[in-house]
Structures are given as structure tokens and as C-alpha cells.
Amino acid sequence: MRIALWVYIILAGFVCCSCKKNPVFNKPEPKQSSSFPASQATSLESVSILDESICYSSFIQSAPLSESTARTFESSTGQRFMLQGHVLKELSHDEDSRMSVGVVAHLGEEVFQSGGIERYLAFFKKEKVEFIIVLGGVGRHKTQIMQFIKRLLSLQVPVGVLMGYESCRADYIEALQALEKKNPVLLSLEQVRLLSFDDVEFISMPGIHDASQSHCMRPPHCVLNDTEIKDTDAFLKTHPAWHTRTLIGLVPPLQSGSMALDLNDRDGVHWGSGPLLQLIQTHHIRYGLWGASQSVWAHATSLDGTRLIPENQAYESFHLSSGVSNVPSGQPQDAKSTHGTALVVHFKQKQASYSVIHLPHR
Image (cartoon, rainbow, N blue to C red; front, side, top):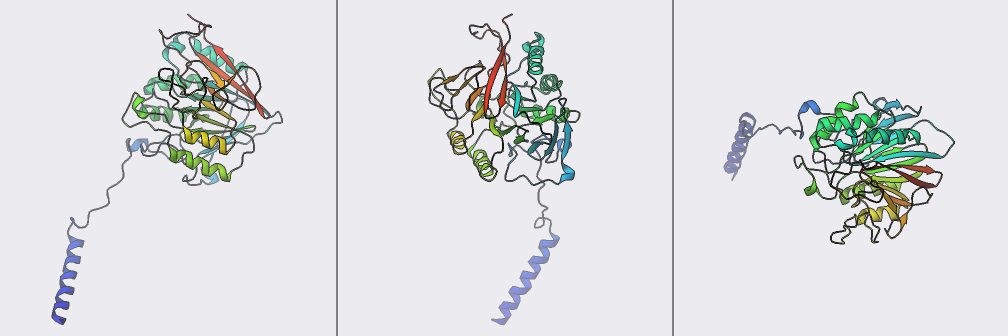
């Protein structure tokens, strides 16, 4: 018995030594590679999301950054901001309790060639917007994406961008990385999730409804999922709102009425997000700005989609479709013969209204 035990010990030691010497038993751990070249790697405070398995910056999982890693900048309106991880915070303060926000979506070559983008920018400047939101549709390829966003950056106010169905994800990331170097006011709403302005707080909900509808499949587009909504819900439970809270996203909440933003006119199906609706109801979020509505025209409804909210009238709650800022040729036009729309949302104390600008028929 003792002899057998000693034989076992000797053999075990031999195998152990062999493991150390034999590379087959001592393979190094494979290095995790990014979906993009290493030269594009970025830190947490950057605008880009490089790993295709990470589609948004998590409120819960993002590591806190020290003050030394925070980035501060100033807009053309004199507002001062600090960007730290997934949070943008306005450092300046005023007493007017109001804020104007410009909204565009689904830009295209025609709106630039026709001078329509200049009309949108003049409208935003006239309305004294402090923040521009792009709800998808910033071009398909890197050069086009950079061209579109550069024009919006010319007002030198913070510009928050969500990637929509049209953009190729790799091109979108490269374009934002290149522009961010010289434009601190540019914000990716996949990365910057909480935007706390002096009078209004915005929370971005990145992700599209159906990845199969996107133009570029490699790497795949991010889809708004339950994990993201649960993550946001957990954050909101521990962070009470100090200002008017507004959601920004591409996928609207599930609605039920005939005016609904999520109503598919072809089959009568409502395709909005049920968990997102529950999040809105649980936390009493009164406003939502959505970019993937079925309609090409900018309009607002009640949360359930049963009531149309008219322009230029203050309401305590509404959910708004951005419409399309560049309606392609051949699409049916409305009574105003518009070829695209942009809008401004005016927040004042605990109410908000919106105004729409239409590009005339050419």
C-alpha cells in the first residue's frame, strides 16, 4: 500500500514538472481583441464604444473617474460643462428656468445641397438653442457622417448624436473619434447617458428596434434591450430628478392610440417598447424625444398615443417624433409641401412646447 502511494506521488510530481516545461500545458491566455484596430482604442471618457458586445455605457458598471480625468469645456453661449464618464454636467447657472433644444434626424445629401441645413441652423440660432440632438440618420459612411456633424457643430453648442439605422457602425465610431479631437462639444449619446443641464436633465436610451433593418451588419447594430432599461431603472431609483427629466432615443415607448408614434400604418401593429413604457410610468418621466417614428413628419402625442399635441402650446407632458430632416425625392408630401423638418423644444419651468420648421417644396 505504501509502495503504491509513493509511486502515485512520484508520477504526480513528474506530470507537474512536465506541465511547466511543455508549452501545450502552459499556453498563455489569449488576448481579447477589440472589434476594431488597436490604434482606435480609447479610454472610458472618450465618445466611442469600440467593443461590439458593449452597446451603451452602463450607469451601474461604468467605473467612477477621478476629477483629474474629467474634461471641461465652454459653449458659445458661455455655458460651462464637465464631462466625466457617462455624465455631462453643466457647471454654470442662471435664473430663467428655461432651455431650448434643437432636434434633427435622418439628414441626407439633398438637405445640404439645397441649403436646407443652413435654414435649420438659422432657426436654431434664432431660437437660442443650448443643445442640439441628432436622433439618428447622420450619414452612412465616415466622410458623409463627418460632413453632416461638422455643420451642426458650427453653432458651438453641445451636439448629442445617436447612431441610427443608416450609419455603418465602424464608420460612425471613426467619424466621431476624428471630430471629437477638435470639438469638445460633440457627445456620443451611446457613451454619455446622463446630461444634466441647468434646467433640464436628459437621459439617452441608445439602440435601434431591429438590427436586421440596418444597412451595415458588421459589426452589428445595437438593439434597445431589457438589460439597458433595467440598468437605467436601477440608476433612476437612486438618483432623484432635480430638474425636468426627458428621455432621448430611437425606439419610442409602446403606445395604443391611432396617433401613436409606434403605429405601423401597413399592418396596424404597435412596435414600441413595453419595458420602456413601464420605465416612464414608474419614474414619472414627462417628456420623450424619439427618432424612429413611423411618420416622416414631426409631431407629438400623449404617452398613450391617443391625443395629438399641437405646436406652440405649453404642456406638462408629451412624446415627440423628430420627423425626417431630409425627405427623399419621390416620397409623398404633406399639405405644406415639405421636404424635411427640424424642430425646437422649449422647456420653461415645468412645461414644454415645440416649434417645427419645414423645408419648402423645390
